[in-house]
Amino acid sequence: MNAPALRARSVGEILDLAFQLYRSRWKQMATATGVLVLPLLVLEAVVPLEMLGMMETVAGLFFLAASAAVVVIASEAYMGREVAAADAVRTVGRRFLSVWGAAMFQGILVFLGLLLFIIPGIIAMALTFVMQQAVMIEGKTTNEAYQRSRSLAEGEFTHILLTGVLAFFIVMFAMMGFGAVIGLGVADVRLATLLTNVALIAINPLTAVVGTVLYYDLRIRKEAFDVSVATDRLAELPVEPVPAY
Image 1: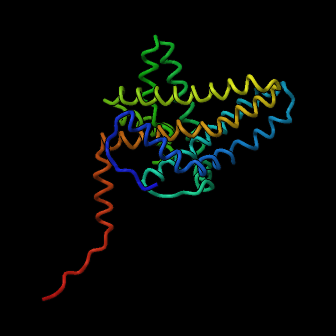
Image 2: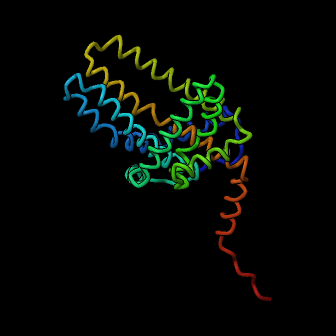
């Protein structure tokens, strides 16, 4: 897939481009997610049943790391570049504390906001929506990522929330479909848990890809990122000497 045109997009266009990037880089995304998550799935298959709850909590951390790796892959794809799954995973390893801190900060802020009559929680979702992208793409710390996400979100709440809600429902309905099939066909708790997590490996990257496309869309809208990139690319072009007469 060639680098997409750098321009502001509608919600539908963001989702469409996210699916294109997902399809074009699904091997790298699945590999990065599998490398981080599959060892845990193997453990879940052998630990006592009473430990499955704890393992699911640990799995959440690994899926968080996998999501961060997908951000790196999606970002490079958006800019027309390639990155190996192993390199994306290594980048996550260097920044995981900030990734985890950003996720915790976002979760706490949204939770507290929802306790305050829901609307503050919705605002918090918009303000923190691209924190993970700020960490993985710009190398921000947790606090810097919040400030960056908040700056990009200002004035774009409706755009962010519509994109996030639609992406959430797409992923939710996909997981419900997998869950229904697994629930009808699998009675064993271990096997059902394993298959559910395998389904997550396939579906989980999409949310991170949507967030990454939205992150760049916000930069184009707020910072003329497209103009900046075009200027940089022009500056890199070789200049042919003017012939002497």
